[in-house]
Length: 255
Image 1: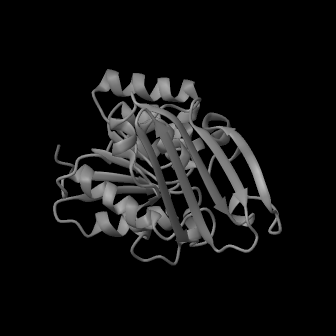
Image 2 (image 1 turned 45 degrees about the vertical axis):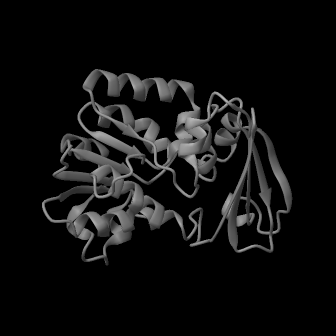
Image 3 (image 1 turned 90 degrees about the horizontal axis):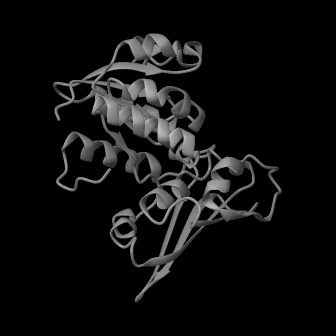
């Protein structure tokens, strides 16, 4: 599909990079950038003309594609309405751990014929997880970040959570989108196991994925420096890569 108009939800580290990329494309227009408070970005000359802080007003514009890079709560609240008229790429994919949300998004997309893209975020190897579903028996993903990045005390240390990825998404909705993407691509939110570890001495965000099954054992480790908050240095580049694939700028089709 050829996308002529693209809406963006969120103007943080990922949303701003997405805006810069889309705004520089020939033949594509930014429909809006939805934020909670336009005044926060008043000094941003490039972003200013596109800012909207009213969700209903944004949805009325009905762009061809919407890129969500804000919070799981916003993806839950706005996703079905967006999918009624637009394709949607949701970077806050921990929202999909709520089976009611997943069902609502699926129903909206089925009714309209629009597509929901689940990007790979800060992780690698989702194609292998998807292809190997029938052989894979266990998936354990361990994320290590500073306590501050996890919304905990700066001196927090040790394992904060160990359990199903579905529960991890409830406990740490803004920190485990990688886990959600792994679960969604692989063996599901209930069978995938999540471990969240706080390390007060690290400035990196580390993800380790251990996969085993019939005749296979995989280990994938990813580490990137924190950009502040919950975003690692690799994630914006990954987001642009996913967008390129959606737009057809790259041959590989998975987002």
